[in-house]
Length: 401
Image: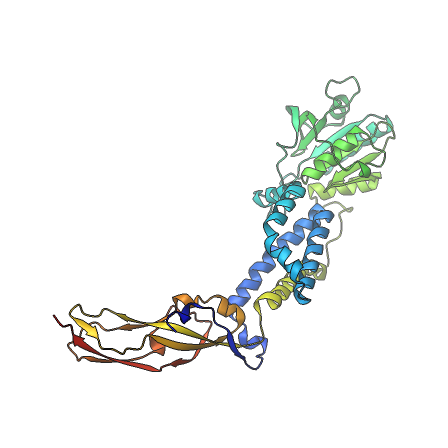
């Protein structure tokens, strides 16, 4: 029995199930709220990025994990347990662009700002529409970039900063086939021509180009990297396409006007997309809250109250130097605790002890303590059922010279 307190305890018996509201604490509500906020941010990011591959892969792993947990699939759970680090590295490598995109969006100073600072007047929108229409009819290729909330600098190369006023003749002259910068892209920022002759990254998703050429590949390439809006005019087909959030779509004139108005955030245009119904706005946060609650019920909530008995040492502290405790003295106590399995995971049995303070012996040589009130290193989530012995009595004697 000398070192039995060091061995892990085994549940002694399983008590009657308790309803979940009897075990629900304020800390659990905070726990669910934090996870719900994180899941909400993840859902918004996946929705905005249209990152289907990452979403599908994550969803499949979650489904497999819950199946393995519910069906007690030992090898699968072992793979999750020991392969988590390797799996994380694989995700970092395969989805590094999506993850980097998410971090850039979170670190952007304007991510939480719902109003766009670059607001174009109706005249500016009409200038862009007129220039695009004329270039499409004349089969003049063009690339127009409208920055979003995320930085563009590390995705583009080259370019000449001009800071010129936006006008149809200037756009036409820039993209004229004999102009030195006609093969590059034009960055339009704050309703002005900010930079011309930019080189954009080419997309790896050539299957989404739909017969488009290099300009379409460049437009989709930038849309894969960040949340910029890119308009491209095809000199072969005379069509106007928009690339945004990893998608490339050919638009008609009316759709193009709506896309520009939506980008600039104008509330005066009649073509503005209608406001979402309040119930629709609640779908994503409610889904995040439901997912967080489901995770709490799966991992943190347990209906069973477990009783476990531990053998812990009895410590005698501050024994005067010239005194000693008479033998035999109690050296161990049996402590029976009850609570949920997660609560027991907070407890380190090797640190639990009955700590008895002796101190001054002027009041007498016999000491008596209640063991339960002198337990140390306990956790508040567990309830003490009993301690054996309930009391400890010892006598002191002077040391023999």
